[in-house]
Image (cartoon, rainbow, N blue to C red; front, side, top):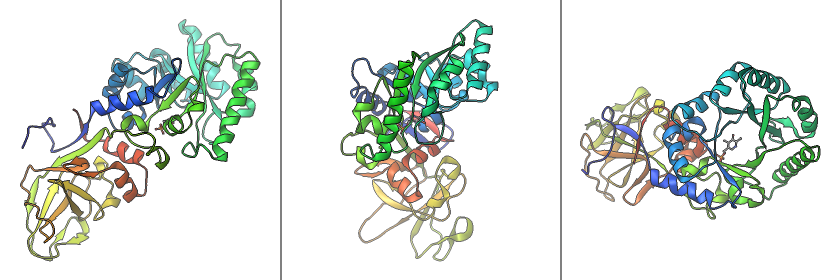
Length: 383
Ligand SMILES: *Cc1c(COP(=O)(O)O)cnc(C)c1O
């Protein structure tokens, strides 16, 4: 067994391929013109990949800004030594204002109440509070309604404590950039930005593209793109797959913590949802469970890789562990496992691969959620 970098205290971990992350960041930078910026979205602990270590790689590869979902995520980046501008992609409660200003985090703003309170506090601290203005163009999630942008700016722009660093919107259907819904959002955004400019309001950095839109519609890169999922080597939708190759960054691995040969008819795991169907079935335990992101709905439905071969997971997935069955069939001769043998839950092993997308399909969700889940508790190893 070649020596691998892995945690000292648990036989399960997430591997982060720093080279792949770097190459994905470069691929996005290559989409941009000379004056266009890259904002790396590192919310939810960089989609489970580890926010500070990933942000450092993105910084070294060249990123202009970071985006997070929560104020605390922004504070974590600052405490980790990240100095680039950071935008928080929603408007937090008023009670977050001191933390925002202390750590130079730019909130997204869409209520005048927040904008003015933010400005007041900034003035009293002798600073200027930068912000990004969110514009609601059709997703019906956050932002100032596209028809109200002038009234909104009139109600806040007199304040000397605030400064608009950017205006943005978010597409609900970026995976269909030829669709009517996408085009309508784009039109509403363009008109709102033009109206603000015509009225003399500073717009700063204009941005709207997530990963899918960045790849599928280069005409909306404007001043900056906000790339998330693609940085981590995952495709946002089927349309981008053939046109923009990416390298998966995360693998999930574990080692066998116990092996046994229960007699035919014995049950495995809570509720005995699997019973050993015949003699000479080896049941191996691996220390990854639903609290590590291996959703319980995958029980008896997923495979793992062992020595480059798929073997089925059996029995209900527990909170911290699950079991797999190694059965000798006439087709494939898999050597029996020993305690400490390597198992791949996501990633490559020899010629075989289990992708986030495969697991997402089995779970009835998207690769985004699968990746975030594995980030919850497993230790991350940067290779
Ligand atoms: C999450 C998010 C992104 C990134 O989306 P991806 O599909 O992961 O690229 C961009 N903008 C906003 C507002 C977001 O919430």
